[in-house]
Length: 511
Image (cartoon, rainbow, N blue to C red; front, side, top):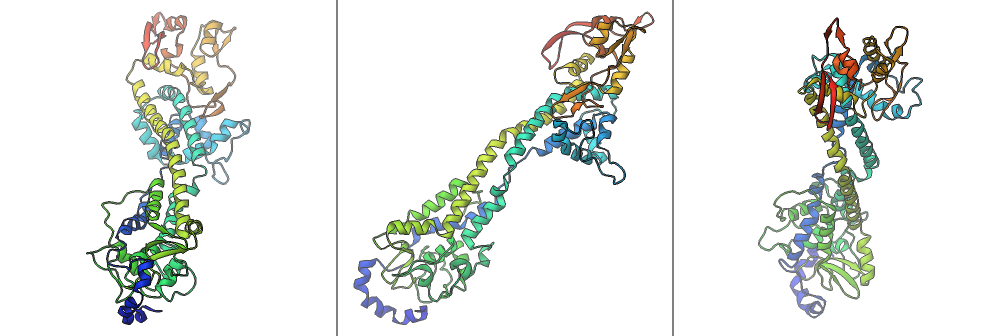
């Protein structure tokens, strides 16, 4: 029966049905469903909250890239050439070349290094790094000393990066987009993105709606609504020209009249949504979704034959003056509970809540490595600047601390060749071999270097070259320091018992 058929006989029907209505419940009146407006507004506000979700996944990726860029910028040409574009296709080598093509460390980091080399194609990137480290006009030895000092930082950054990759590897299912779609679909209908796009089919599914009670429920049938917007119109809309208005908000503007066939359902939802008072938009949480569901279901009434939200009378949920304004789930309480929990709006909201909880747990897990990685970037730049503000012996100490890498072949050759008139023990301390015939040092054969998270197994012009020129190259070798002369004039001085800044080591060094 249509709304226009209800209205002319409304008064007569009210008189004739008074006894039965008194048994079934009160007729709907202005503000009858007022207590439901708050929970409905909570549900209708969820899409706006989902839009405010942030993708806090891998926030420190830029820090890792910056550290890798710093590493390559300060490296020698031998290392940098490994990532140069090759003829004939002008592409960078996709894998390490023999004999390092099976090296696990290189294979693990190779793609990062290729990306790193590509970023440095933009000259301003390298220029900015040299500017921030105050090394734009520095010689090779100073860059090598800084590079050696930051190797422990690079290793830690590599570990944090690995953790973050693992934590974010399967994050697509709990992305903002996935959560937002579930919430939008639960509110407006499948693939509907806004109130103005809501239609009858998205609200009640396939099939024609000929009366409000067909959608919302009657004395013998259950509701067909699939969305929280559908709940809103069944509970708060004025269901006919002469029907009852202001069902959910006495004293406020009435909603638009809901058509029997639901063809204006979007416009009616918009008028109900306008009744909601929201102080500000807040990003939703898993708890806020569950709270919104719980707040609505607190108002569920149950008897032996049905469960319902709103005001029910024996004539159903038509929204007429002689009827109820409600959403009905028929059968006993257990069956009604199952029907609610299997309804589309409920299942999608709970799925969104589960995904959001997973996302929140993941973001809590990645918070620490994100912060630590960002801190390592700052430490690297601070250390680079600090080294230039301290005495020269600091650079020597930094280059010989645990974790610094072997000098490149070119720098070994330069450092060892400069060490003349040395004993075998002195050459060994310098990392060189002893030439018995000439009584001087000479470079060793290429050594393997397993710097974690930076190069792989061989130094090959690697970042982290030890200081091999000037007095600092003698390190703690007092004899070599004192014998470094030009004619009878000493080139170096021995410093006793000086505590080297930032190393906590009290040692004697050559400077």
